[in-house]
Image (cartoon, rainbow, N blue to C red; front, top):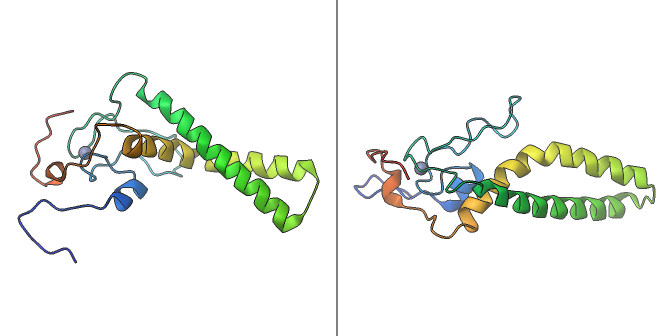
Amino acid sequence: METLSVKPMKISQTYALINAKCPKCRRGDMFANSTYSLSSQKMNETCPHCGFKFEIEPGYFYVAMFVSYAFNVAQMVTLAVGLYILTGSKNPWLYVGVLLGSAVVLSPFNFRYSRVVLMYWLTPGVHYDPDRSRDDYKRIGS
Ligand SMILES: [Zn+2]
């Protein structure tokens, strides 16, 4: 149980990751809207809480394409195998339809979590700093 204390609050990585929070402070949102909002996906340039600049260097998020690709392959293989086990169908159009449909439906999820995974697990030097999650943390950028 968390109790009130003078220590900076500790926010779990799982919570921060699922909610796409800033990797540094785990409080500010990385994205300006929700995963399945009707407007287009928009990422905040800096963390609204601690001011951390999300695009660490120019082109940083191109790497997220590879993560997104891995997500897609994993999802499609899982779906195709699952579909075969459930239906036993050999009709290719069933697979094409379901896999293309799932690619469209899952694309906002993949866009978001490929960037989250890139920031949390694949970028050396980006670590949680409990000090930055304090209410009185000054936004100084970077
Ligand atoms: Zn932050």
